[in-house]
Length: 224
Image (cartoon, rainbow, N blue to C red; front, side, top):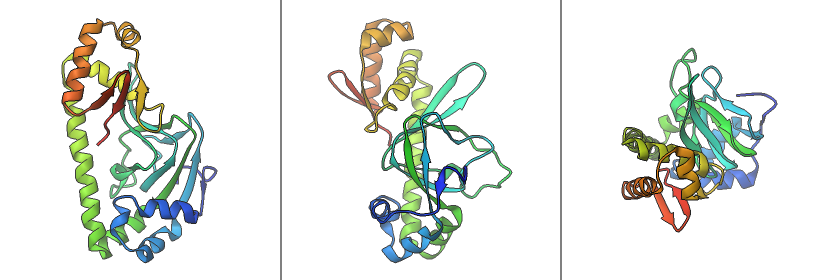
């Protein structure tokens, strides 16, 4: 657990039924999932609360039921926003099956009041070991994470204007649970210190590469 004060050792029936519909959990039976949830917790975080850091992180999978959390890499010079997790998202896979002495890869903070359910690693291991359909679904879940990471690497190694706009959108779109934001290109260009023409070209590149979707001034960050 991250903190005894943040987690309650129970999961409501409504939340259980919601999680049952989400991959990879939808690939197994209700009975098996109920057994896995016997030691699950419900967690509550306020804006600014630390969900995980290098030394203190959940050993299991967390399902976001409400709110937004953001994974970041922090240094003395700057912060790089790696990913935002919103309603229906699952995070924590990077901490599974590693030595407890290992450090976590990111700093994770709540950007909105957040509710999540935490399923311990032991329960995930049992599902993988005894439920082949869940194991296959979990492999598919991890494959999606790898594809997403490869796409992110491509974005962050792109030319400077594209990289800057992607990082700008990572922050802006994390403020809304649907992963979108109204972007004023003039304001964004001023903040990023590039021309509007350059930023429009960068936005087109991101859209064509599958990073974002645009509808007028509304930009949606595609997270898979």
